[in-house]
Image (cartoon, rainbow, N blue to C red; front, top):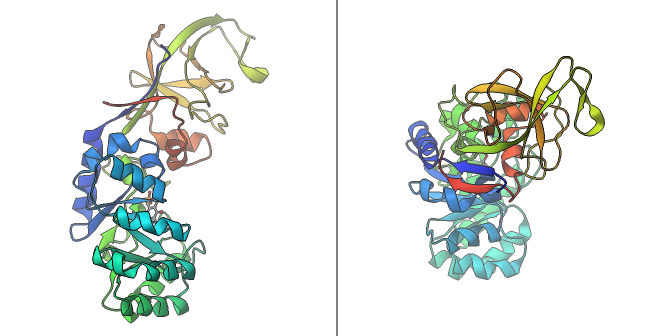
Length: 357
Ligand SMILES: *Cc1c(COP(=O)(O)O)cnc(C)c1O
């Protein structure tokens, strides 16, 4: 059988959740499990996240999957509902909505009796300069006052555009958030994703919303997971299915982009972009075999890659780590001009997901 397996280490996931708890002891934790738990598979992750206070997802369908698996924790829809007809299920399934535009406010008010009877909170989104979702400062105070008057309990929320870096916008976003928070006092508040959890301990407030750190990848380009004391949750593996001895001057793969400068042993590994392994590397990329870094050579195909095993022991069936505890997903991302988040989320359904490490 073709071996392409994603192992999910639930102890690592628990470890990382504990790290969030250590860093944010006074806040409730909304574990972000959107996009199928950042590609890890909600089914395999939710049990390990049992100690979380709540979950965060991008849409109703993702929330329903969590409910169908039997989890009863609060769930926040971070983009709210997309149409009024979703409100019925929001109430039946006890989901909390974000509101980021006026129509969502109207839809919510029409269902206020049922919503408030369930003690659900409304998350009101501030657009403090990212210009993606939310109300601007001069609108949001009225929105919150209106919602409060209608009997809703509100959580003021926003998202940093540069929590992972130094940028002048950070100060503006922070100041606008604090300004609205003060004007709407008393109000619950939440503005920290993983990077902000590390960077702004003074802004943890009532709820923090960790995503990438739970999965043991880094939100920062200049800090790796060891420095952040996090453990990689996913190990993405495949096996060697062929070995070729090639001579100096021979080529490997599509486009014949790789030429051997000396005789080499090339192993073919059963993984490719059809599984979600990235094709467009901009720098030399590596896989790991028994703690050793082994270069990828030539182009990535849909189902296969070639690696240079001239200097290591390798045979048919040898296990190869594409990313995981030896070769970090952030390093693979860096070699491909992207971020760990993207590689994790865009894994396809082809690799089997299993608990283990
Ligand atoms: C995805 C998301 C998060 C989590 O971000 P990380 O960088 O993965 O920690 C937090 N808040 C919102 C609104 C999000 O969409």
